[in-house]
Length: 123
Image (tube, rainbow, N blue to C red; front, side, top):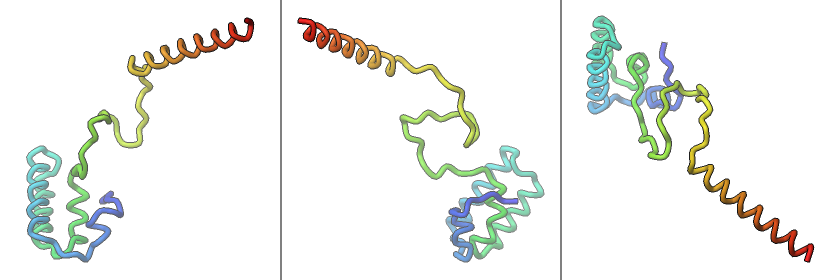
């Protein structure tokens, strides 16, 4: 059973025609999945038959659902890529020195300012 999101073009526009570029891209993905052992020989042949016989994107839902997902965006440089599955919580990490140093400096500044205010009130 496929787990494509509703926003997938195969589910959102099932009656749209299949382009040659779409067909070539799916064949390339099928070849890669077969070479890496993610698709069996029988499934590979059946999916290829489906890709070449399909006239609309909706007919390709089962094929696309059987393939590994394709990244549709670049990961921003500041966001580390984790090894967990989406939705899983990562283990807590200790704050880095980039966070600790400003906190200590800010605390020291606040302490000095408080001492000055107290001394001015006493005098």
